[in-house]
Image (cartoon, rainbow, N blue to C red):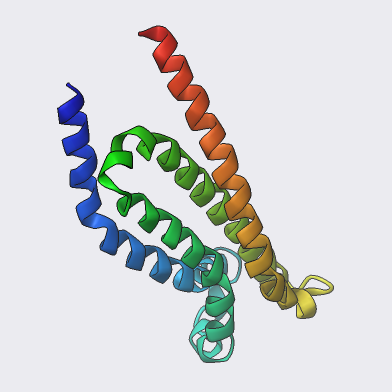
Amino acid sequence: MQVNREVKVKEIYKYSGRWFLGIIIFGALLPLIVEIIIKIIFDPQNFTDIFLSITSSFFLSALFNAIPLIIWAFMVRSLWYRPESEIYQDFYKHKAGVIGAGILTIGFILYVNIGIWLGIILHQPGASTSAIAYFFLPFYGIMTNLLGYGLGRLIGKIILAYNKEQM
C-alpha cells in the first residue's frame, strides 16, 4: 500500500511546469478579470470603455498583482523538487501549507481588486486614489503567503495526527 501512494505522489510531479506557468498567468490576468466582471454587473452600458482602459492601467496592476502569486508558484514548484527520501514523508504537510497559502493569497488579492474596481466603477469618494493599494499589494500578498503556509501546514499536521489516531 505504501508503494502505491509513493507512485501516485511521483506521478503528480510531472505537471509542475504547467501549474507554475498557469499560476503566474492567472496572477497577471486577475485584475482584468475582476474589472470585466464588475463592469458587466454594475456598469453594462459602458462596457466598451474597458478596452480603452486596458492599455493605461493593466500593465502595472498586473505586475503588482502577480508578484505574490509568483512567490506562491515557486512554493507550488518546490513541492515537486524534493529529494527522493523526503517525497512521501513531507509531501502532505507541505501540500497543506501550499494550499493554505494559495487560498489565503488569492482571497486577499481578490478582496483588494474587488475593492479597487468597485470604488472606481461606482464613483465612490476616494476612488481616484484607491489604485495606490496596488503598490502595497505585493508586500501584504507575500505576508498572506507566509501566513497561509503556516496555517495550512498546521492544519495538515492536525489532520495527519487525527488520521494516525483513527488507524
